[in-house]
Image 1 (cartoon, rainbow, N blue to C red):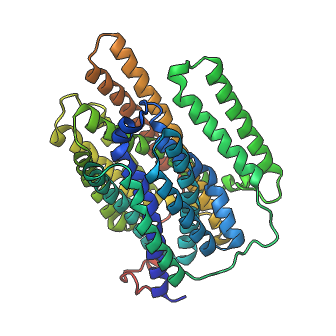
Image 2: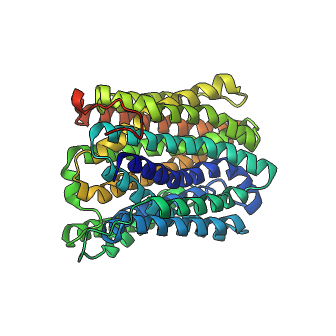
Image 3: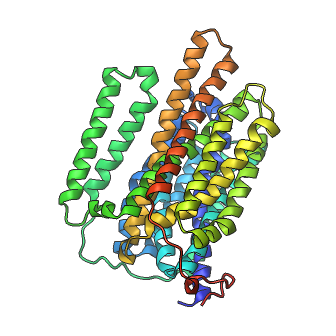
Length: 479
């Protein structure tokens, strides 16, 4: 495969990932409208996000494994079709149950697309400088999708309805499918004769879903209630079964030996903590701007635009340069500390806050931090594995991101609700109580990001590539 073909293939893979990222961020802007239209409560609204993240995270490992077995191109196209069909159902949903079920189906399709896409990118680009640039482009598309998502979400919700934030995936999915058929090589699977670890996929997915459900409903049911303790206990038991399966099965979904690799282990813990902070940032800041500051959906979308544009720019140029110049550890730690600082600023945003003083600074810091940190986190998670294990490793790191996001968002949303209830009981007004809950969630989210920065800065193994490994050729002309 020539260099130009590799970069064209990268563009197609990133276009598929763009649709997944677009769907994640576009929903955040429309959450208040969905809540009003379908009658969600504040805590149950989390399931519009979590239903997607849980199936996404639960099936990433299986998606990567299926790609290794049956061919990455074939699985990429299958996941794309499944995701697009589920988007149609989301767009036509007229009840809470149907929307949440369709969002779960979207997550399954998105899991296959993302796991296979990252694996293909890592296998296409094996030389350090090329890989750094390719991952920079991948990060740029992820951040750019966020920019498009928040703007498009605000525009569609304001001018049409929230249903169109899902229906917009239909033409994108069709275009990506056609380009994939034309450009991606149809390589067969390499893991012949191996069996799928279906038991592992089922147990870990149900375990995580039970854990998040128990956490989300902890405030209403009581943290020491029979329901909450039973759900969390069942989740722990199923996770223990999953570990036992992985230790004994011949071809495990998540080989436990993978975690003996230092960078894989540390990067996954960092990813879990960071995702918990970042998903809370997107979810809670959208609610803060719309429910506390009174912004329209379009204004919320514009509010996110500066941070998403900065994330995109940093991912494409600055992050890759920093990795090649300083290695993985320093850019990762600095980026996460900037993200933490942004969340700490949001933790002080008042009820009558202004955009320029109380929203924009936190958005800018979080955007810079996320844009700088994404590339080194992904590279660290994949740097110690052999190419033959790239599908599994990409599934593991993506699972860490999505599960960290789902569990972190559940914890912080519950924390916000508990704080709001306590403030209302103390005589605070509705807006003051709501804002106090959001401030508490931002504060804890900032602590998560700071812990991730500390862990990554101290524990990630790094090296600076030699001069002969660094290429300055433009994209598409790298030898």
